[in-house]
Image 1: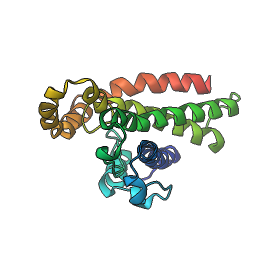
Image 2: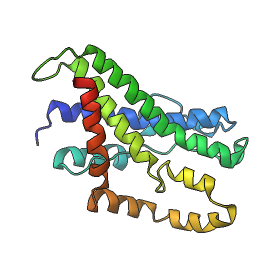
Image 3: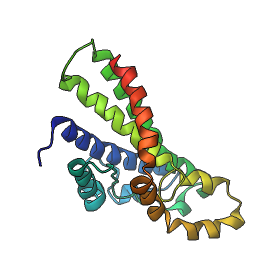
Length: 208
């Protein structure tokens, strides 16, 4: 099946965004005393150690080819909470580092695309299309990961505020997170309801 230019750029941007998302987790963990990711060779821009064959290649490629919602992930960066200075507090910051990085990348890319856009009509030049799509990918990835569903980063917010005596039940619930997530995305199309308005606002900001 033919892949158009937008799809290829989107796919490439998605891979870069998920890798930077994971690296940020490891960098922040290192700041708080855990060098597990560094020792595992995961604080690198080389994509090979980060790629999950299914989550980084197969699933997003299927989405690009078939039109199903495109989601992707890289191999989770290893973090050892027991090596952090304050495990429960610091794990919250480590978890939120990923989506925060995506939002910052989205802002920078959107501002760059906006500064380069001068009312061009028709097909956008690559100098605008690449940062614009990179902004779209990052804002979607950031929002998606803020959903309070395990294993997404937003679940760390719940873990931080739950009373400690409730945590064992929460940990039991976490094993069903992926199932709930897939139902929300592919059955109830929650992603479309969240992402479409956000992307429309982003498009208005950059291209108007």
